[in-house]
Image (cartoon, rainbow, N blue to C red; front, side, top):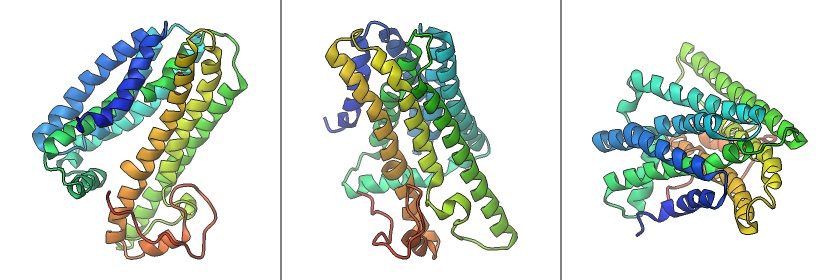
Length: 315
């Protein structure tokens, strides 16, 4: 039973779609697409190689599947459907094609550190059947795409109102700003690494630009991308009041908020900031000092000291 427990909240979110009149078809088709994608791109390679890094291919391509299906099947306002589908396709294809390029150049022959960290978690919990746990882990990612991470797209694209709400514009502008921040952070880190390589320096801490104000500005920006989608979905969710039963309508709203929560937990605790810092502290002598002066996730002014001095031990 403990093997399927991580799947239950996401399966419940997916099942919720079938209590609506207009989202059930999207729910079924998306579920089939996600399961096929994850079976081929993640589960089979993970079983064969013993590496979970293939999630980095399957998860973003699953977002692209959500975007494509929303564009093809949603019956809301065409402009609204086109915009939200375009956002999902852009996010998914950008990361997914990037991961495929890494795979083509051999990067997947070694397990990524964030998935090494997950193995450490399992070891501390006394879990022995690692191959089975890897399959459960892969399915959690796929079922998240089936359920809560698809909610913003499905809810927005089902809205037939021709009027654009100010929150939709705010959400789109926030998404553009978050994407720009993520791109700038990535570019600043790449430039820093190139400079260190030219100078023959290794294991240096990137603390320039946005990295002076957050140890993980790219992860923060990625979280804000999802917050932007949730904000943009609020008018469409509010517009469903009276269309769905009260309890279904309320749970759809909870599901939207849960999408933000899922991404926060993932980007901070699960495969993001804390796993990265667990290894950074070991590789980079100056990283503990960096932790003492710079916020981990939320950007803010530099500090003189802090009680946060090392990365979390895997739980």
